[in-house]
Length: 90
Image 1 (cartoon, rainbow, N blue to C red):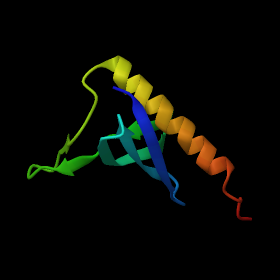
Image 2 (cartoon, rainbow, N blue to C red):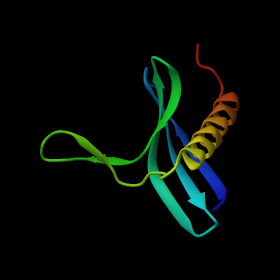
Image 3 (cartoon, rainbow, N blue to C red):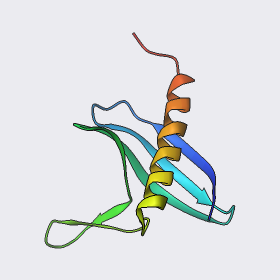
């Protein structure tokens, strides 16, 4: 399975830096990924929903670490490109 497109929607927030949509094999899209600036650096949060008990459950997510690493690295790289192409406001 190949990542064929990543779309980034930048945000001006302390922790939430952007939303991302990822297309796989030009035929399946996952929307609602969040790029978060956390205490340990940048990471990608999978789309999730709030359960009745107040906890969150991922709606879509990789099932192995290799795919998770590939997805996170690709999304963060595209975020950095999008951010570099955006004028910095003073």
